Image 1 (cartoon, rainbow over the protein chains, first blue to last red):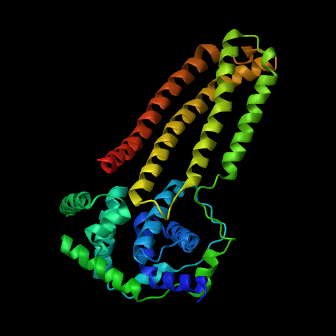
Image 2 (image 1 turned 60 degrees about the vertical axis):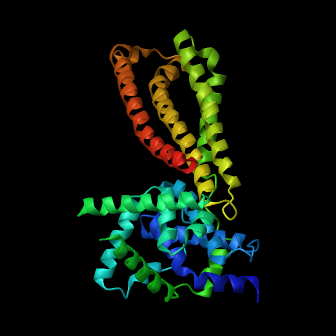
Length: 163
Length: 197
């Protein structure tokens, strides 16, 4: 199988992952699509050097989250050279309004967290264990555990205060 | 909404997202093509254009420096020239420093550290740039008038009213700018100390 076909397969299997990261790190549909393209491009660039021994999802999270950080610096001077219609906003088409509301609220609270907390809680919600989170984020396992507890407390307070 | 509910909501979103293939092969291929130019780390035309204009302005004042008679204006001109020549270099150096990103191998916290350090440097540069802009605004009129050999008596109230007022506005605005950017700097600094601890 050609490298491009394999890459396309990987991206298609992980569309959801990229979508969630782009939604958490941006504030508009245009910016989200922009980041989506940038992540796919950065994944493609590093795909040949991707070490099969490491987990595919670990590599994807690392590249996507790192790209999201650097994307932040150019949010006020966005220049679309060749926009591609991704249409990812349609993901929520078949969700009921209650579900959508909960997800919107969840995103709203996570967006209030700082960049480090945001990355950690995203991986936690994605079901990653402390070891995997530590590997992607670059902190010790103990440190990740402590931070997750703190973030949970912070979110709890935020949610209580917003009621 | 409890945390458990949050996790449920997240799982629901994940399930929906996993089962929907919205991207076609064609779209993905398009994103990987060379014509799609990555917008990360790019030094834009604005930065180069701004540097060029600044340098033209600085060289104009240097070329006509001998025509400035007033010693105070000579000092103002020297400060303006120095800032105009140095600030764009700092800006371009900072921008090009971001070109050595290591998105695929460095961890999230390492990249976050690099990003925040750059952000702090940029914010400081912006503080200086805003103050510099105001400084130019105040000194450029008397400076240009002097270079062109025209008398400031065309503006009778310039030194007695306009200049002192401009200085007051300049100082007030500079204070506001420094405070405004300091807030962002504090946020960046607190995340950095979180990473380092």
